[in-house]
Length: 455
Image (cartoon, rainbow, N blue to C red):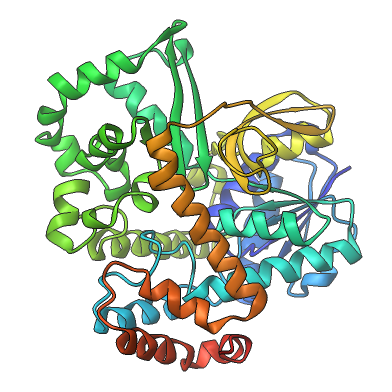
């Protein structure tokens, strides 16, 4: 039976979802789950949770744990990577440094945690090291990339190694907010979303076989303003209201397709993000997921999840199934593994090499598209061409950002890092940007990155 390795298993949110889904997937029972994390305390908590949850659900699964990454890979058929190297505090410190230099909410991408630090160095190095370890230890395994940056990471691994890599994200499920707002039956709706991770667009929207975009246009015309004044919008969690925010409608009008999920965070134009009041105008009363309000709320929820798991695990009599439920999480990782391992047919939204799926984008970049899994292979849907304006002003610049990030990383090119900062619309001067880069690389957690990047 399958051996599944979870790298970065100390994550309370991802690990509880994976364990629930594994315990509910009988066709994977008999398998071994290897939990790996460098934080032994968190690893022990997750291992105890997994062992107890499987006993409560009578799932025939074996859970092992280790802090040794190479040991964890031995015998692996599937490797799920959820790692955020160093945790969030170094990233938050880098953001504070950037803000002192005039870069509100940090430099580069508009998603708070996407790159995880200057040049994404630590994340990209981890991804590449992991993939090369897999080439040596478990060359036939699948690498399922979940940690950000998924776009850069999966493209890097696909180009630089021989590993079978696929990226998985859940942001595309936000399309359901549109379906709910329009009052449509989900069973009667068919959607295609395509683009890059955190930059996907509603390329097909059908209701009962008919184009449903006119229904969305009607909602925008007649109902959007009332929705933006409603209690649901004004008091909703930052990430729960973005999908139908003024930013989403404005981007649809500018680019010709409706943005979905994390696209609102990542691919929205810079002028939505100049300050908190502007972010509130476009993304809701908190300024959206990545404002100083929204992001703080998210980090507090992560801490709460970790405390909840720790507290429940410390009580042998506590029912984990009562606390967490046993319904599927909605994450695609375990359904993907089940489909490949057991030769089942499935349709999932995945990040895979383009290979002509989106005709006006390069073949050697990873795209997020609907895929069919059959005969233990992944087949991407043929999307055709994206609208010209969207391609020129969003997709091609996003490719350039990815290529510049990878070039700087692979070549150790410090000048490219500096040019990336100078390319930010908020850059004030060459000297100021150079000072910012030097200060970031001088931080103790960036000693290795500072040695890597040279003039």
